[in-house]
Length: 115
Length: 113
Image (tube, each protein chain N blue to C red):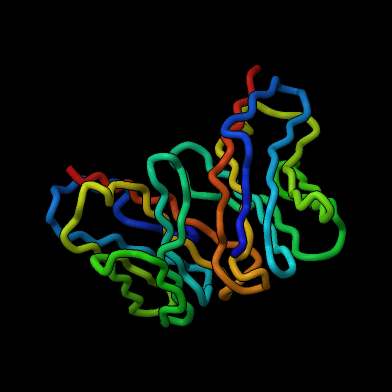
């Protein structure tokens, strides 16, 4: 079965500093990996995806994620955090290890960026 | 112009009641979903519909019944509501089952008292 793990419940960063939100995955086929963000009282918004190709994926709002096959990781990164980045971040994987299927979400990581 | 819209945004009801949540998408997508987010923010798929046909029904009590009158709508009807049904329910859609990204509604916060 496919799964993702987000080992940190919360990440605290000072504004202007780089941020990393961690995600590791377990899939039986090719990994189709995603990051979503949820702002307070809002639905989820798509940030970026990895399907194939370059290991460094660029997404919305200056975020990027690095796919590392050997470490089975897909960490979300941003070079310089903004207070407005404070939100709940979800890593997700397709549930059948392929191009079709539902999204299986991690438990979420709360990012808090302080001025 | 809202891509995926759900109504109502908040719903407070008593145990035992029957309620419905409506979802509409104007993206022309073929696939729609219902997700449940519990109090710990854990997200879990409930149903997937592709072209009005049910393709996935996770381990959800049969008190929950989705209805898709057309590709643009996927409503969720819940019978005999229980306290444990309290959660935020998200509707989502994607171009097809496995579309590169899913678009989510703003959620319906259901509180059963």
